[in-house]
Length: 58
Image 1 (cartoon, rainbow, N blue to C red):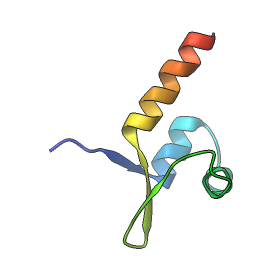
Image 2 (cartoon, rainbow, N blue to C red):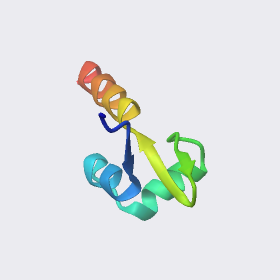
Image 3 (cartoon, rainbow, N blue to C red):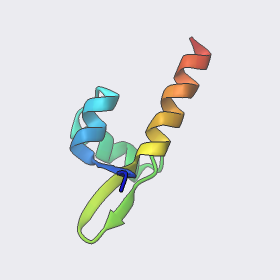
């Protein structure tokens, strides 16, 4: 089964930001996240879409 979500720590590394900055962006509604129990996760699909949008604007 393929992973569909990454941890906040993994997403922060991919995005090149601190975990604290990522949590703030999530709380402002800038980055969608899901709660799975007490854990928060970011969709891998969302990260890939963000990467594609960034490549288009370059």
